[in-house]
Amino acid sequence: MYPLISVVELADHLGAADWVLLDCRFSLDDTALGERFYGEGHIPGAHYAHLDRDLSSAILPGRTGRHPLPEPEALIARFRAWGISRRSTVVVYDGGNSAHAARAWWLLRWLGHERVRVLDGGYAAWIAAGGALSREFPAVHAGDFDGQPDGARLCDAAEILARRRDTSLALLDARSAPRYRGEVEPIDPVAGHIPGARCADFSANLEPNGHFRPAEALRERFEHLTRGRAETVCYCGSGVTACHNILAHVLAGLPEPRLYAGSWSEWIADPARPVARGDEPISE
Image (cartoon, rainbow, N blue to C red; front, side, top):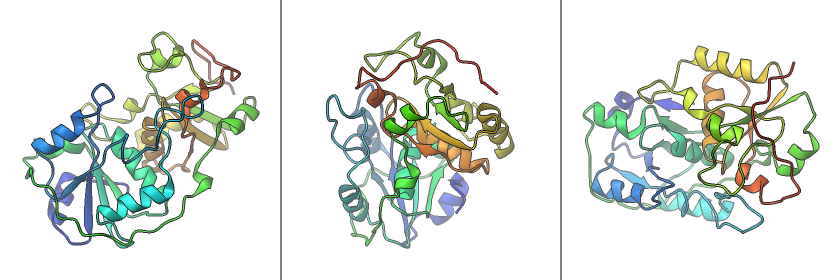
């Protein structure tokens, strides 16, 4: 199933019995803001998916990053509560850059549900197109969603550490260049990046209007960053925007990278793990 959906196509299917919408708007600066925005208006029929409460599990200090993957059983129960079934087409959206929507997209596919699409341009595109809005909470009809986590989609810190000098592995950091270089760090207690990683700011996957760039442009971008490496692993600050780069790879028609879900915030939880700062040239 093609990973993106336009506002026009979504409007044509609004209210369809086998379609489920998830509103993933969220702000790290104010973790209640997305839910407040949802209460003030959302795409009709959408359920609210909170990044911390629904799409992550509890933080274990010194062991996990800021957004650990949800426990599969809890996530399956949440998907069922939103009415998701095996046959459902799920549409996920956020405020506009699709960073949080991409996390929900990845989680559904991690559990084996491929019928999931990201609203291109998000809520902002829906508003710009004059789409209908609602303040009503959707009726709850429990679904029969079931799934199994696919460990092959993941990479952990131990593997990254062991393969630091493996020239067959491309490690992409989805954070902004200043954070990658360690010039600023507004969130985590240690600045820098995982040694050997290349900066692949997720925002460069988008046009100025928040829509994804054409597949050809995305392919050119990531082929340049990976330079023929056989494998790609994506990470970010806490395992959220890395999913955006994974989605962009799929849109480009490239092999799907694995996710280092713990990402930078987990990496630095162990002070024995090495840290790099500054730019690292792409090695041949």
